[in-house]
Length: 237
Image 1 (tube, helix red, strand yellow):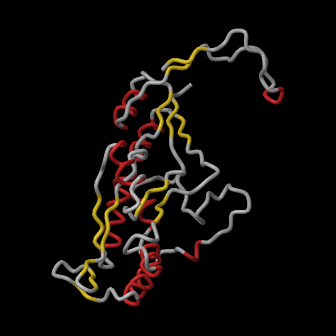
Image 2 (image 1 turned 90 degrees about the vertical axis):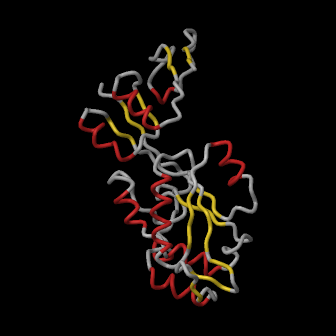
Image 3 (image 1 turned 180 degrees about the horizontal axis):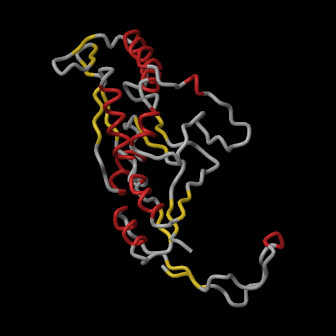
């Protein structure tokens, strides 16, 4: 997609200190669904900016002189929403246990970089009047285990996962296809909750399938919220 400026444009806001047509003659958008291809195109000089690059390659971009931007939306932080009418999340103790059983510090260390900051609430810290609620969801595996016991998930099956009334405690996470770090992030969460006796499966889907199976499916208990930080790499100069 190529956007070309209007040469007769002369309505720029006074606050910008500019008038007349845009400085750029045109902008060309190239759709590259694979994050590896997006990164390679920027490194090869085929694009001036690459959006949603895998955090694991940021060091190479920085060393090559690229400018890394990690803006934060005025909205929700990156995380998961749970449907409270879908088992096992219909029990508030299970929801609290999942919240307390995720080691966010390890996710930041392993999947992301120092440019990402830990969440302090359900909304971005830059949102006006946001309150620090860290004490309500900080990592506490012992508390998480106690909550699961209180919820009645005290049995263990042959695989070591919790069960109650013959049912296994578990669910599936479908990582959002819109963020490059979602798959390794979901895999880490599976490990964290697995230590508590919760079986968490992960399955990567393409965008149309993900929308149908997750966003538009009232029976899916977990949905990844992506109104969060995103990353772009801008070429030198």
